[in-house]
Length: 454
Image 1 (cartoon, helix red, strand yellow):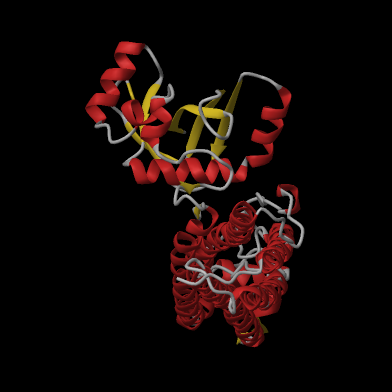
Image 2 (cartoon, one colour):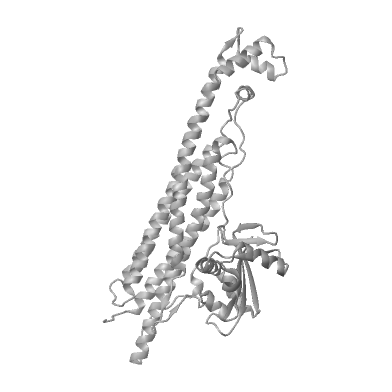
């Protein structure tokens, strides 16, 4: 196949990915910061439970997906840089001349993010009702004043929609990168263009999901506001009713002021109880809307989960050198057998073990628990994710001259299973890794062990 490549184009394409990475990092950190202000916005009563659960899950998934999207630009940028460098080296070797590379990107030009997980939207909010209104509602068995903060919900809706619109604009950086390489002729160009197109599609899916979260917040806010307004109107109506020649509001005022209920008070209670079905109907309507918005949030969360699973591979994208050998950007070997061959024991001790094997190991070795990844693919995904998120820490360790680095990380999703000596099985979301220096790997270190932990 004829090859016609201008290596500076690959560097320019990588630069577009770097810009996308930096902007995506800003969006991710900005969104995480704003979400911190919405803690407790859903209230803590029964009417908000379904919405709050779905929102919390969706918000966490959104930040995790946006984090992976940010790192995906790093993977593609590295791929483009390495591909251009491979062609440049091949040209120089064959023609014995130097070729223009367009400059090169330093690893520090890329930005990795680890946003703070959002707090739960469940939380107590003050009830904006007077003494009389509160007393009347207290007599309606099974009725609770919806505690959601409408203003915060609407503000959250705006934040999510703006974030979605900003994320959607990230596809321009994929287009720019593609423009620099689409007219070049080389076997890997179609693959690079396909990867950029795939990332562009995932950006659109992410943006749509973020906007859907905003729409759900707005719909729930509107339902809560309507319930508040209709409840207040019904309270006014009930308060104006006359019993024994006295308005119920006046009777209630006397009761709450310390006067006895008397016959008028008993009659007022009976009248309020008669209107209880109307109050309950308001909650039924709100719960229906809450269920609908929760469904929208679950759909968005599931969509984000699919995006995240697909986008993770970009950060682990492999580069083929001129000799046809495969290498992972950063230089470390993803193969568990490769790690074990240089002194590790990940595959032999911490992959695919049964609960009985783990319990026996915990007992015989006198350790609190023994753990396992479900399979090698899961182990490699977890290890790659931790190394990406803690890359700066690894770099600083390598520069320090210390012989060993221990990394403890929480991933916010299941990493494997831990079993104690009694045989109690627990799904865990943490991981521990021990890195040790070695001259046997390109990266300068080996992974001595890695295992799930609480």
